Length: 410
Image (tube, rainbow, N blue to C red; front, side, top):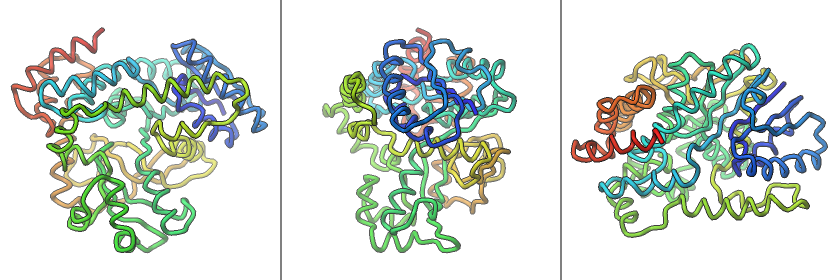
């Protein structure tokens, strides 16, 4: 098995390498366009694998085709424009009175415009040079829009996010169980999901979790306990941008330090640590970077897709008939049974009206955003921004659309 990681200069990569070392990977290739970061991160990756006694080959390269050549799995984790672009995504919308966030709303749209064309170009290289039947596993945000664009272009791709596995690990710990014993009914769109059930065999233990740990779970997702009780679900923490919009916006406008600035400082410290030739394990500071359980989610999915250990994983895939009220070609995030033939979504009962309405709203935006990212059409861009519930006003749309298209072209 050959695995290629595109965007391997990311500080996440040691987390991923740590997990991949447990798989039967004959060749792991780390690729990045930033040679210095690749050298630093790749150096730590090599030391970690030597410490673990892994016998498979490890190669670092800045040549995309070399990385992809013959690969069975291509993991894409790029950030077009780096943390500088992220800072813009989190601050530029504030001037228009919109929430600044890198994966949703106006910031997420700007990121999609920059990112989708680059990922589609990578995917064409995969089509031309990877092994027959190779899978593209996308961890690049905004995952839902990127995955939609990949599938629209006919690529064999699946999207992956770490939110669901974070819930699974949390619930397993509270229940005193192993994570594999817990299946989380986590459904919606990427970064717009709700946990509606937590299955232990045939039993839904979500009511028990809420009764015994409701206050803690509510605090984890930044929502009042009453809201969780009334909805009968646990929303992902990204729902705070919708359910507490004015509060979040006021905090951002009040001068709260952007997450991008915090992450940039953490990355600087991490890279300095990675340069230490005596370091041969991932540092604890990496846990503050975000992306908890990223490697476990990625490794679990690759293992299932390889056929080595089929199982249930929460992934981003075509809707088909999974979520009633959405179009078959929409991309949803839901539990799926995964094996060497790919993911097949588990059956889902209909979403409650208060969940479905918001999901339909954001799905319409994602469809238009994916199209705008490919066509660069300003009218489609305006429609996308108008459709998003965090924007939705023509004056804001006019102020954002052309500027974001222009900056994405740089």
